[in-house]
Structure formats: C-alpha cells, structure tokens
Image 1 (tube, rainbow, N blue to C red):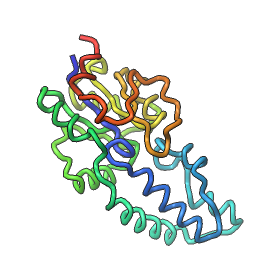
Image 2 (image 1 turned 90 degrees about the vertical axis):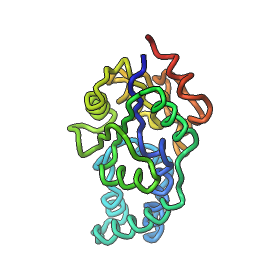
Image 3 (image 1 turned 60 degrees about the horizontal axis):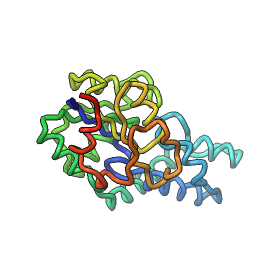
Length: 218
C-alpha cells in the first residue's frame, strides 16, 4: 500500500533546468565562450558544488574573473526567466489525488532549501508534509540520503513510497533508497539513462496517480 509520494523539484515540478542553463549560457556568451548543452547535461541532477561555472569560465579564459559579479548577473537573469515557468503538467493532479487517498507528500531535492521553498511558495504549492534538500543531508543525489531523510520524516517505509524523478542521478538515489520510482524525462535530458525506473512517463498527465499507485506491491 502506498503511503508516501515524493517529488523531485527541479525539472519535475517546474522546468527550472532551462532558466538555469540559459542564464549561465548568457554569462558565458558575454565572454565569447559557449556553454554547450552536452556539457550542461552532465551537470543536471547533481548538487551544488558538482560543477562551478565561474571556475570553468576562468579556466577557459586563463584569467581571474569577478566571481561575485558574475553570480549576481546569473541570479538576476535566472530569476527573471523563472517567472515565466509554470507548474508542469500532472503535478497538481497527482498531488490532489494523493491527498485524497491520505498519502503523505514530500519533496526531495538536490537544490538548496531557500530555492525550493521560495519557488514552491511562488507557484502556490504548499502543504507538504516534508521537504528535504541539499542543505539537510551529508551527500547529494545520486546518494540515497535525501530520500532516506524524507521517508523517515514522512514516517513511511521505502516499500510504501513512490518517488518521481526527471534525472538519472535522482533515479539512482530513489532506487538506492528502495523506493518505487517513476521517471519523467526532463526537457534538457530526454535521452538520459532511465533504465532503473519502474515506470517511465512522458508527463505526469499521462496516467493518474491512483493507477500508478496500484502498481506498487500490497
């Protein structure tokens, strides 16, 4: 019986991956450099610190840059682009169905808590029973720590929970924690490795949560 539903945030609840990539790509362009999508795809799904865009740009240019100014420019543009991003299809419906079934709701993210909670508030998505982020665990995805922290907080066992992910690193984390995992490929990662997923959907709008929950063991 399913008692917990755990969403990833970036790329799953809202397509924040495109604004993040575009904002950094514009910073690189100002310095005559190209931030390729192929490179960025290797970064998606990993926590802060996995890749430093400023350090990479400095390496390419062979010069020291004003990192604080570059990050401020990036953040301003990222926030501007994020304003246009809405909740992805099926998220509200799955959330409502789960609530109606008495299923507890969580978010497990590799991003920092302020980013996740701030955007959830902006989108009008509240009432989560538990939110765990990069700040709350020792190791980010693909380690299972954030999922283990969420299900402990929710008070459910891994066999009683469904994870929903858009990245291969998130999928690895959810499966390592023992959860049934639904993969919804992100807009920038349609060809990522989702072979470990229990189910792959083009969108959460493709199937109702009640139907997917029925696939999980008794």
